[in-house]
Length: 357
Image 1 (tube, rainbow, N blue to C red):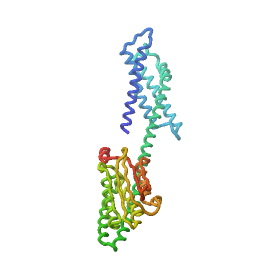
Image 2 (image 1 turned 135 degrees about the vertical axis):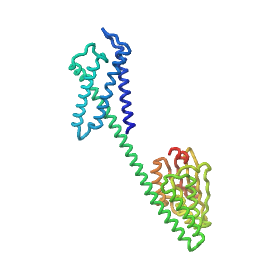
Image 3 (image 1 turned 120 degrees about the horizontal axis):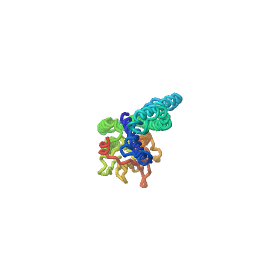
Image 4 (image 1 turned 135 degrees about the horizontal axis):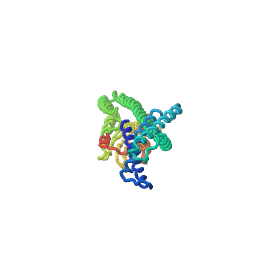
């Protein structure tokens, strides 16, 4: 606010200084029958006359800020501003009458009534031009403040929605992981023990990033490895995992818990539904300045549309909040069987994020 008022004060001073210089230039080009103006005299007349408007403009600005013309007090505001206009007219008349020996507008100082009439003719319209300009500045500032407030409210709403989505996703994931352990504990206690250790690591990593909107791809892949270790302990030889990660993407930023629901979808709908061994591929690459991530499986029961459960709906909502329309999330059948879940995100590096912060 203080910076805004300082800039407005500076603009008023600069404006009336330029007006004074223009007036001085006009005086030098005017023809006088009995008088020849020097450059100094023209500059003195132009600048002093214009600078007298600086306190007038500041006074009118003060009145506009406190009595703007707006409903429901339009008549009151117009009345107050009209009084302010008359005060400016009187101030200008007194100043010109008193400073005429310096300004030398008149060879002989006329009666004050004549100076006052001239001030009304010269300054009434100019005062209301000031009032109109200050109203425009006032409304522009209000519009800017409302826009900032709306953006802040929108950002807070997005944060709240993201928190709600994370709260929805974490219990969903935990329930599925515990269900997998329950299926294994009587059949293979050793594998169930490894799954519990992996679940502990996974929950610890998840809780550490609970307040984080984005993590590096390296952190996201480490969390995904914990989850896949749990599933490999449960499924044994029925699940093999292949990794194809481009070497220069470790610091790429992605939403946390982005890949785990996609891998969970693939295992649940494809690999766990088969008797034969299944293969899961995790891919990450860069293309045209974009980050591409994919989870591929080698076939399963049911059409692709049946895979749109809580996890995928959650991911779609989070990506929409974080990236707007600048992202892609699609599930497509593969020509050789199976399904590919593919995500495209803007490629943002962790180093850039820290520099921006």
